[in-house]
Image (cartoon, rainbow, N blue to C red; front, side):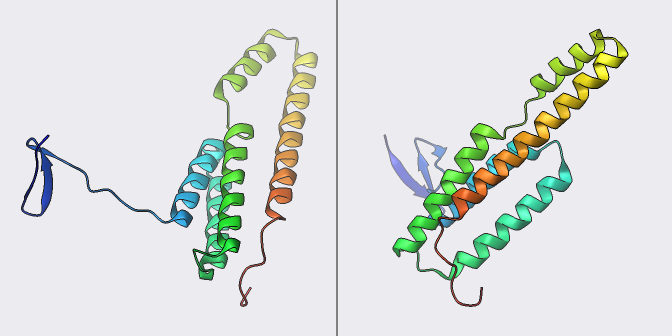
Length: 148
């Protein structure tokens, strides 16, 4: 393996090697949160916009904390927990919707309406449960610095 530089760009055996980017812990946490929210809300642009906005506001609130402090590590750990929870529990499943629509198409009209109402209510209840769980996770965060 021969590494050399041509014009300031590292090359390995004639191939360009991508420079290693060093993201901060907050940047990694923000990226993980946005990826999990995109998987959860890609079907609803309004919800996706507002959840991205609220995430950015919260990250801005905690941006003044020293990155080496225990409070910062705790806040970032909780952010990673939220991202993991959203990725596990809130991922939108197209397959589930397709299966439900196939079921509704086979049922008589009266039963189909009831089935659809139950499905929509179950989706809304699940989203409420997820939001309450996220609020419970976020309640463990330290308070943001002074201006907030």
